[in-house]
Amino acid sequence: MKPLILFTLVFIVLASCSKSDDNSSASYRSTPDYDISIDGRTLIKWKNPNTTELDMQADSELKRVNTIAKEAFKEHQNLQSITFPNNLKEIEESAFEEASLSGTVTFNTNAIVVFGDKAFFKTKIRKLSLPNIKRLPYSALSMSYNLEELHFNKVEILGFGAIGWNYLKEINLENTGLTDIETVGISGCTEMKSVVLPATLKTIGYDAFWYCQQLKTVTINAVNPPALVNNPFRTTRIEKIYVPKASVEQYKRATFWSAFSDKIQAKP
Image 1 (cartoon, rainbow, N blue to C red):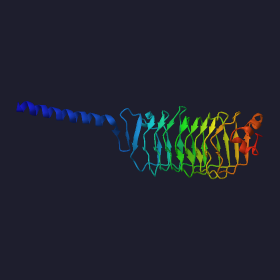
Image 2 (spheres, rainbow, N blue to C red; image 1 turned 135 degrees about the horizontal axis):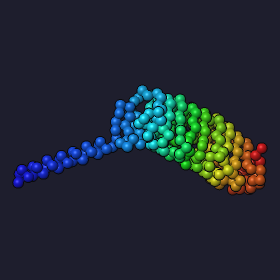
Image 3 (cartoon, helix red, strand yellow; image 1 turned 90 degrees about the vertical axis):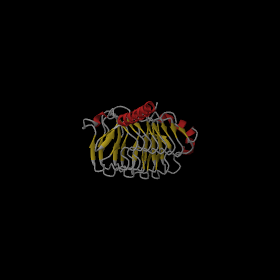
Image 4 (cartoon, helix red, strand yellow; image 1 turned 180 degrees about the horizontal axis):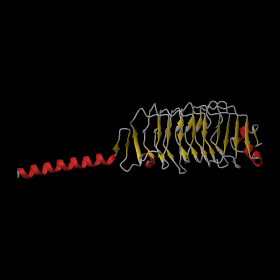
């Protein structure tokens, strides 16, 4: 009986080790520069702290990546520029939080890219052209103080605090398909003087332009007044609100918009 019991125990231990090894080896592959999923689709972690420029599309392995994992480049202080692979589909939460990125950030895809919360929070990005996205989520581009130029393709929702604390002088969302700006969606843009909003806009949330102190001109292309959640211009210096000529009186009578009736006028 004793040999049988001993054999059974040894078998269980070996099987357990084998299973553990299999799980470990199946989780990711590791190189000196990065950890990547076994299927090559998810960049889990960039490990080389000396990388200054990264062209993922030019690399035979990295061009297959479609997901940048959570915190993959977080606090990478030397990375200046990155070109994403054409297959990119998702940038997860805090993927580039507090990374430098003071050079260029290049997207080369027409597909919709999903952004996680704080994806580019507190970076040093100066200019950025976003890919097609459904939602720019919580603090995705917040506290990127150096940001002075931002271009959109398609975007449906600007989430809570999505864009904030930067040197943008204007934001043009015309033809983006934007439907909603959530609470403090565009906030702390202390140098911003004008914003253009699209015909598709349905809702402007509470304090949507919070602390955009220099904001003076808002152009809204929506024929029907978007629903306002209280006063989105409370901390601005709004002087003119341009709307479609045929909609001027409708805006002046609309809930909350009526408080700005003396500022509402037809688009030039």
